[in-house]
Length: 243
Image (cartoon, rainbow, N blue to C red; front, side, top):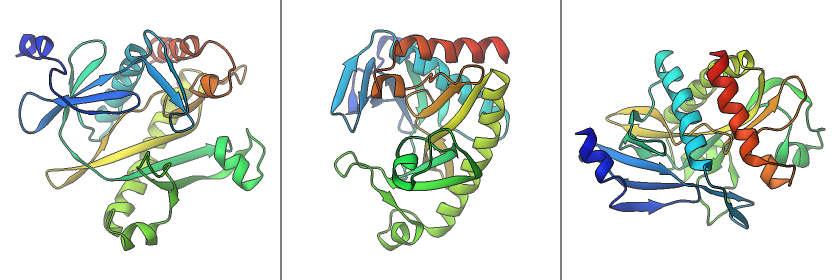
């Protein structure tokens, strides 16, 4: 079975996103995700191909999802196929992204006039519409239920899971000497359950080195701050060596 997967990885592409390919899986209940080397920012306006980026994101995300599974969070991961490809459960993605913030940064700082790096008095949870065409606009709970993107019970569960994931992953990164500033999550409906989908990687998180405050995430690319892959490598190395 593993040889069949490896020989046919992403032979039938169902969808191509900015950073991943979604392909047919081994049965009707699975898909294959292949991480690409493409790096984008500002809704695709800035784009570059960095050899090895996909492999780094796959390794980091799979490590974090394995950790979350061991701590009671169901994810879409079935198993890793190769360095850039992962077999996952075929879930019906909720078209709402969940953004968790521990420290003011990025758009939060710009919109609310809070200096980047300011610790928030409580963790915040925001929703945005999962739509590249619309630019992933922020949306509130009543608007989400009004247009049928998700039910209130689902939103409540997504928030509860997001806060628990934040607690778990924040502790893991802290042990590795990394500050989890904020991150984005996606959930899917699978056999009557809400499960964690997509990825958690430097593409979808803000991660700062605890000792220096240096950025180790996609802001290196957004803001032209230096070697993006070096930042991603440091994240993987520190997670691997300290956990």
